[in-house]
Image (cartoon, rainbow, N blue to C red; front, top):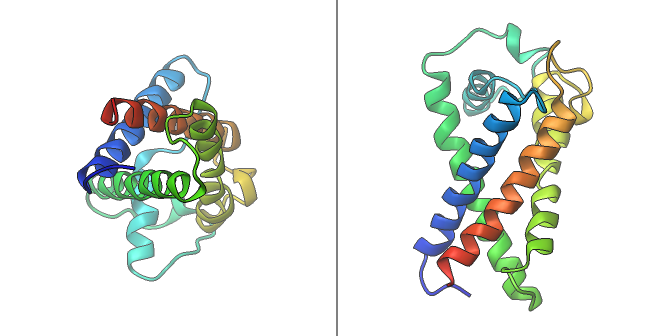
Length: 160
């Protein structure tokens, strides 16, 4: 277990950054076609205004600074999930340094976009009705594997 509160925070930043970096690389290689971060920021802003559900978030009125809204919320969620990973591994007596467990946890975090975010944005369960040109299911799947890989790297870097 970690000795101070900064360590899970750092692991969260590392894991979320690896998710973003590797997803951008996969997008450049045309392996994934995720949502625009601006739409994610728009949805986060609407949630803050107590409007969780939309017919199509892309048709919702844009808000100022959508990307600036998306990034800190995305990193806060990643940091909370990293802390949950570290805590749950400790509670179960399992090693947070395990690549298999980190990847499995990363895959499990797909529940958030597949079952909450995509349906609330108007794109259906698992993002099956996402905007043309996106491949939300596979993009999310790969991005969250990248998050799990980042958890593994972050935990190993901090606990080395």
